[in-house]
Length: 449
Image (cartoon, rainbow, N blue to C red; front, side, top):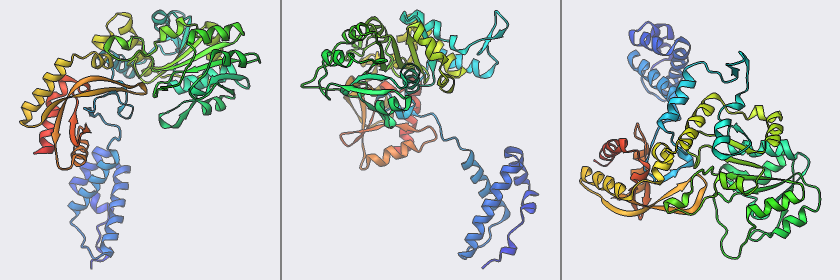
């Protein structure tokens, strides 16, 4: 067995030409850490009876360690799963204009909190706000970092230590364990649940409003449906009951739809404009769901309530950064210009012609020389339109072990995410950008050869 004394010293290793290249690329401190860890591992191998490798091999092992340390964990993937707003895959991909706006904000100084006219400190809350007001008709608007933060901020600012009335049917939990009751408790609001799990009547709201309350809160069933023996009052009726009692109505809308999903053969998802028209005083919704922009929580509504929300100390803790504000503004401009279907990827995918999807699936099959093309369903995802789907065409690939194929596709340098349909690997062109078609084919060839 080799002796520890025969292990080359760090100083000797650093004198070698390959080690000097590592120093130039990674810096001295990081290379030293990698070499020391590599030598520690080598000592453990020597105890097991292994021989000391050449210095060149030791350096190569250290280089592998450096590469592993610095490998980013967040990487692009190709989404062939057919889920448009795939929460685990980053939800909404962004338009080219949105990407460009965020790139410009990232690579330059900006007037984030600087008033160019007055030449002094300004407010970041103005960015995107005027676009939201013009688009929705709301009196005021505020952008924070996500919708959960928006709901927490609104409740903290308007209802701390006060009663907030909400239907039992709307005490929802979304992905990641986010529960409306927990958020209400965190805000300091006193939860007053009314009705039952499946049925709540306007009279339940009216009875609860006989005692002083700060707010009525409604939460959209974004990721589930209640069917069968169930009923809930219309939002406009709830708003009227709240206002008659002198109480504000807050609507957690969630998905952020600004277009009518029913126009594309889907169920109707309540829009922001409809919520405002129904009488909601404050509305919270996401920027990265059906709105199709960057992650954001958007609050719109009455100016006097928004001013109170903006002044709350929590508003600073959950504020949006310059990249979010730049990207959201660019996305909102698509809606104002009437080009959302042409420019925003989420809406491009929702409105994609089924015949075009069929042609692409057939082209994939022809290029591979095997597989079957069959009808299937695409899902919206992202906690929007539960149980709703769009007709699509799938490329289906038979394999003895489909899970193994999916794992190999995920292990590619540019991971390809597919799904299993009837024990076959299924790929849906709807959620694959057309410019990625050749990459999909090359990836499948590489894995299935």
